[in-house]
Image 1: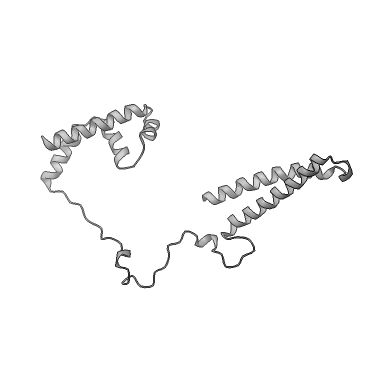
Image 2: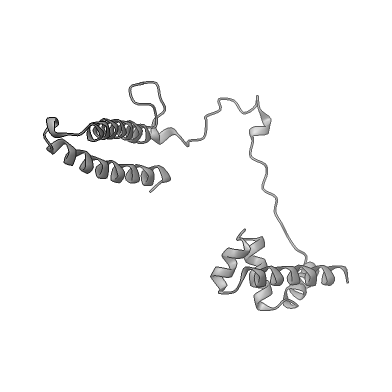
Length: 164
């Protein structure tokens, strides 16, 4: 389910609630309605009409009533470029391979072994997975300040091992 589908569902729920309130007012004899109830009925009709318009817009991907809009399926598609030779910067950058010599591998492992399990885990989650300190803290059941301390400590140990 996309974010648009969730928004459509939310709009539909709200529209049905407003429609129920409006239907209660419509059951009352129009002559028995007070001025305030009549104004409320007009406003509720406008709200429902606006919500129907918005729901239709979200479903189709273009403004209702216009026929040259983009369809929902094509909203996030990558634009098609006829000739990439005209724009060489559009080419994908070449994938660079990363190889370690056996000596570099041993040095990297030596540095990793100097880290505690928690320091290594926090550093990995923060640097590789891109998680925030708060997210890591929730995952590991520790405070975000403790996560920050572990990450800083791990970085300092790596710098010391690398320079020393």
